[in-house]
Image 1 (tube, helix red, strand yellow):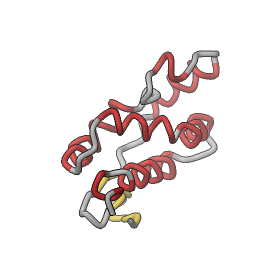
Image 2 (tube, helix red, strand yellow):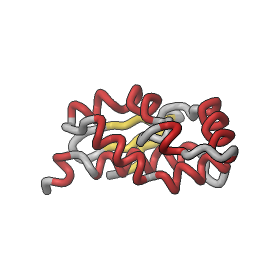
Image 3 (cartoon, helix red, strand yellow):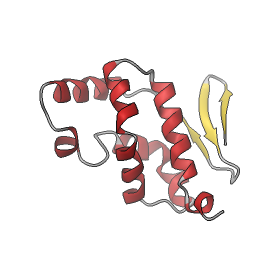
Length: 117
């Protein structure tokens, strides 16, 4: 797996040819999530297993991931497992491109074709 930079867009390119382009930062969603969590909301309870980011990321990556054999529940599990890095993004300790690139790589590594080898 390698990180690809082209025309200002970062992506993760897997050996299988799966390309996950990094979507624009969901800045308004970040503010909503951050305010809710810092206000005492239980992140998972209020926003689900996908921590409020699933719809946004699935819209960008779902077609490619689905074609490669990943279903939405597995996608949600990977997001839930990436909670710590997402928390750093919410707090401003990580920039979106770092977090999204890391998550894209994690998703690609967990594709059925990647785990079969």
